[in-house]
Image (cartoon, rainbow, N blue to C red; front, side, top):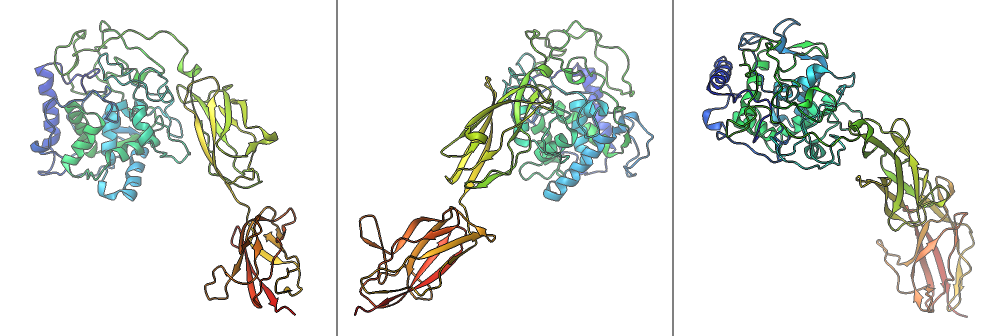
Length: 563
């Protein structure tokens, strides 16, 4: 990260020494040669930092509190401690459950990664203070969105908007979102549904933790190797200080944690003093003249306290020493009052047989800048592509308003006679927000049986014509109307092919043909074949009829010698 918000690890030699002592104390308590402690050669180059969006969090600011020097328990003892102990070692119940569930899920699909849940806990601690101390609902969704500052290049990386504000409510610049602080462009790629509710919500701890786990395990990383673990953490936020802070909490949590009720976790000391992660919908930060609270950390952290008034100018080439300030945005509608985008509200595969109605209904959900439902949004559903499918009453497009739950359901969609794929597009009427597209497929009508309706033997003199041949196709014992049928004169071989002798049809030009493909059954499932001509060669021949769906019948035709 080119500049850190609220960074207290870079306030001078004294704080640097204390931070180093904390890390050293934690590392010293390890067994020698622990695979999760990076050797000196594995550490990234000093000062490594990036100001782009290649990191999961876009290198956005993070909390820099260090864990207490006194560890939750002695090395070698159980990590399943009772509900007593250091306040800092307490992790809110839902947050802890999400981390452990992610470890189990990833172990089942990518065991070689060896993802430890304590690493997720360490990242969750520095990114959001464990979802602001566990302020989540029963499903694990934060009670209010956790948003990082606008990444507008003023003290932070410059990342212009990539999601039209769909995730972060900001259509000018991106912001890190949720308890694991993903920027929208990264979430679009790595977002997961960790709680099985059919949504990928960066504000849900189960979804966010699983996404973080997948992201950390990207490629062929083995997180039991120090070098791979370091690379994974740096890919999340490319900063040496970030790596050291995460590793400090990682080692601390490995020594023992306990569960505390949701909402009762310890908040970082600098929560709300320079980032809006602790406040709902905030878009500005205090100016450098705002005095931070001089009160000690609620958990007795020995981390050095910042001076009473941050310096408004950078004192370190790696980033500003104090909290950067930037002009407040132009007042506008609150995120909760702004339509931020549309999402698929659960519509699955759209497939129908020609002439039938699609069983699946197309449903879209409008959401505001906080991801909540947006009512009375105008949504237009339009059929796109070369198809004769239509909504009820033959409409190719319809416009509806979303309900109180933010959803709108399109009218019944009916397939036409034209088979193939087409698209239905849902757009927020009169806006430039991205459309939601649904792929639909129309398949040909099918039959599972076909047979001749008459029983009279079919004979004809050489050079004459046969009596009309009628067949009927059925599907599940019901008449199969509009089913395509192919008629072919075949040889009497083990693997028959088209016969070049014997009875034949005539094309429009009157020329003999022995295969017809443009046939279909009528409303009763019946088909009367075009006139069949007998040539001059006497004998018994075969006519094979095949339907869409694979039903087949073979009919014998006998040509008698002329008198």
